[in-house]
Image (cartoon, rainbow, N blue to C red; front, side, top):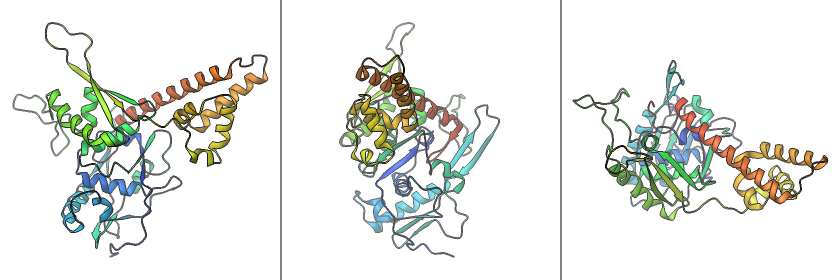
Amino acid sequence: MLELELQYEPEALARVKQHWAATFAHQRRISVYGKRIMARVMEQIKEDDLQLRDYYQLRVSSVVEGTDIDTDTAYSFLKKAIYELAHVTWEFESLDGSEWYIRHLLDTTKERRVGFKDGIITIILNPQLAPYFVQIAGQYSTYKLDGYMGLHSWYSMRFFEILSAFRDTGWWEVSLEEYRLLMDCGQELDKYGSPKKDRKGNPVMKHADTNELIKKTVLGAQKELERTPCAFVYNPILEANRAGRGRKKIVGLRFELLHKQSTVIPASWLADEILRPVIDRLREFKVTDRNIALYLKVMEVVEARKLLREWQLKENSQKKIDDKQKYCNAVFVRVGKQISEEKKKDALLARQVVQAALGFDKK
């Protein structure tokens, strides 16, 4: 049997790129340490990786840093966390419900073992789930682990992941029903994944009272995230019409990010041999640096090049652009916002098709 000693030096990229199908999936609540282990694994996955590593290793100290427990005490927590991850399943279901299947997150069938020894954790991801970890394109968000690894609540971590997907718009609006699913506060399930019911046959709901739901899931996360890039304020969305007397019911929540995405073009973009020529051409058409910073990565290089070709064709015709700054910025922002909204809608649809994240349930 291959042992669990460190076989390579883990490269800490300090950021995670996560598929939106995972971000917006219905995740079961697991321990904070389980989330931290997966974050340390995912940060080792590089942009140009074509496949998963045969195994991933990380130091116990990298999981417990920022906590008040030492490495020795941490072993009992990590044992439970690894046990949790080994039992996490990802569920896949067709939209019409005619097809459904399930896969485990970790692969414990290999000769090399999943576990820990001498301060080293070894994790083997199920290679069948590779499309959700490597070569991620289109629907994804990126967030830095600085701030994330210091969180002490699963709800705070979920907020961090979700709000990171809305850094471009600066706000997230969600129905109360969808919010419950994203925060694992929907119907309680039995060990077979079927909804539990009380003696009267009514579904059992976690934090059934809306005020309690907000208190238990929102307020604590808001406090924890106040010093992170995902600091937020929130407002309830009330029903539009109500028959009869009484207060209007809360039907949704709106979260406003206090720190919106940077409006300055990162130096790394200007040094990139693919992005730099596109940025230069956009500047020639008077697109502002602010709009480039906000929407270039959202629409991606291919779409930006399409716009540039359209503008150049106009310039070569008899219908030249009269005011480049006004026209090109308006088109660039409109297309950027449209693509951003389409990606978010696609991501929510993907959640219905692929229940993929750290702990999955049926819809």
